[in-house]
Image 1 (cartoon, one colour):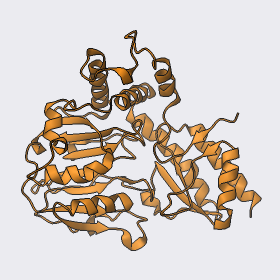
Image 2 (cartoon, rainbow, N blue to C red):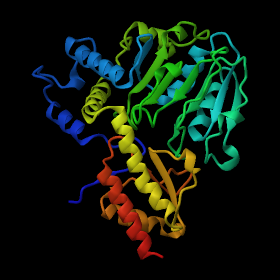
Image 3 (tube, rainbow, N blue to C red):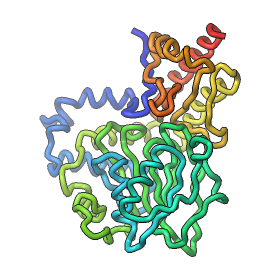
Image 4 (spheres, helix red, strand yellow):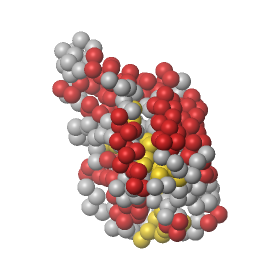
Length: 363
């Protein structure tokens, strides 16, 4: 059987070593006589797993002590509501930067709780670039500034962190679902970071939130208990049963990243992988990437074929070659290769070679 390389945008590929360890520990974790998914979330065995998972994450990213790390459920989509519920703090408006479908969804949800000021948008070019900060029109009365660092569907990524006026000190909030842990991160630049796990952290079912402590404690009136960040922070993410098995697998991913050399090493690898595909795309008119070169994602590479009639044949031949989940999102069509941390360079190199050969056969 061919080696299979899975380019799914999420749930996405996990490191082979992580899956092998999970397999070996499936029936009996560390001679406990239990599978992790059978453990009480308050038992000493799972508490040890949870503590190591948080400790490894803090070490990997360099999370300061005045930030809480929350392990929640509901996906990143739940944060579209939780962010305004917790961070409006008596204010009536918030700034949002719109760079694609996930930004748009966050804006739509935030409009339920406040007046959203869309401070900048790339909708004028079908979300194919990141608006430079000199084009932003921020509201000085905004409770926070929200952006999506990587648009999974459109393949548009911020390769910079916005500068915030220190005199205004408006908290910066980022949805980092699909590029978290792909490069070093200065957490101190943010008030809150959130990410769904199923792209670059671990399996579906877990949502990770990093929130500065001073932003806790003033949710809007009638905020449900489970949507109050402070409740989760006070209870170490154990107010209710967390997604225990997803936390365990994510913890294994953190350990794997540490063994690989950390986030600086991953950034170098991710740049190499992305360049393999973008260099090929730029070398021929058989394929086309619509995203501005300065804003191309290292995690999600969208592209189209010059002749859309060849799309199905491309996907068919790719699957035969062991390259799967390359079909683009239904809203934009074309192709998309998601090359998160767990995708090895060999997989990207094989895809690039296949694309070159396919193009030569269909000129």
